Amino acid sequence: MAIEVTVPRLGWSMDEGVFVEWLKDDGDLVDSGDMLFILEGEKAAEEIESFDSGVLRLLPDGPKPGDVVLVGQVVGFLCEQDEVPPTSCGDMVAPAMASVADLVADPASKIQEPFRQPDVETVTQTSTPISSKREDRIVATPRARRAAEKLGIDLIALMGTGKGGRIREQDVLAAESSARSVMSTTGAGGVTGNLQPHTTIRQTIARRMVAGVTNVAPVTLHVKADATNLVALRNFLKEDSVDCPSYNDMIIKFCAVALQQHPMLNAQWRDEGIFIPDVINISLAVDTEVGLMVPVVRDVSSKSLDEIVTNSRQLIEASQNRQITAGQMEDGTFTVSNLGAFGIEYFTPIINLPQCAILGIGAIRQEPIMDGSEVVNKDQLPFSLTFDHRIVDGAPAAKFLQTLCQLIAQPRQSMLQKLYARALTT
Image: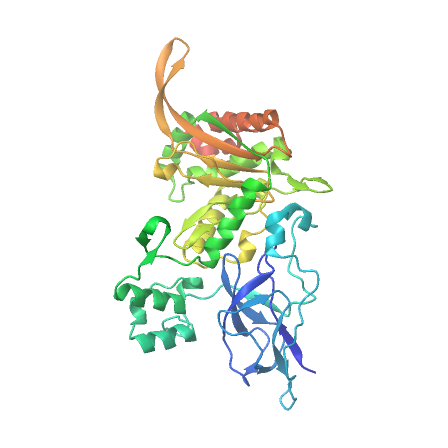
């Protein structure tokens, strides 16, 4: 009996994706574990693995590269060697699929479980990151290769925007457009310029940013923490250790400690009530060439600072190399966003739904501060906390910041004392 090949869910909010290409041809023998096709979700493109074996049969009404497909949609079949394949993929789609538009309009009402997993009853595949190189050749989609050959574009000179740097047809077309005169378009008032179509990732970011402002009651508090001791400790560790934690790593750990004391900042709004997760998973905003990625450092409370350093570096590297998976960006309960490297002090971070709060981290600067009757220079670390006023009021949010500032001001007497006992006694 023919086995359906269906579209898996790459993220908890995903109900559709873009079909990129088949990795097998019609009539190819597929073994369990083979990669079947590439699916582009909201923030990542991934190779989809088969859990079954058989002869792949692609039908005329199956998806073509670039087509939008629904989660659970049948895209092909795995048949026995001499089996007559079905004549159509049909309209078979997994039931009860909430649309992305519905999620944006009312995300809390669509979430029934804190951390949704893929629908294993309708998905016969799983996903793994695309290797940046296959068989020592240029990684490009078939459509990109055909377009490059037709237009005389050398693929080796292109930077792909697909998963793992995969060159897509749109990359070839963009290169060809740049090679000739830039097409001019007229906007309001007769202004001419270059129109850049929205990418899937940009559209996803836009939807989430709008939802983070319109579907919550956002309030932002600003404060400065005395980071003098934190800076001194990190400078010591930098001389003493190759794997010195970044300020981000330290603050992620401090946030987990503070969230344990103020769990409502780790909560989520639901129509039926306020859900408080029993784990602290901190999302880390990462800037990449293709847009903002937000991988998740899981169960931060149980991790040592060394483990956080290793985990966050792996996630940042995977994000910047376009090898991050949708699963690595799920289940966050609190977010940190650091713009300090760009000299920014304060900003208004937007809540990453369905989370309650996001912490913006600014640049550390020395400032003259009154210390008793004297004026001394101290390192000041700006924080901007945006929280959902539906879940918590201003006072609890302020208390969270107060706890965080205390941890920053006295790191030697907090969790770092246990982690770096040798450094603190030297």
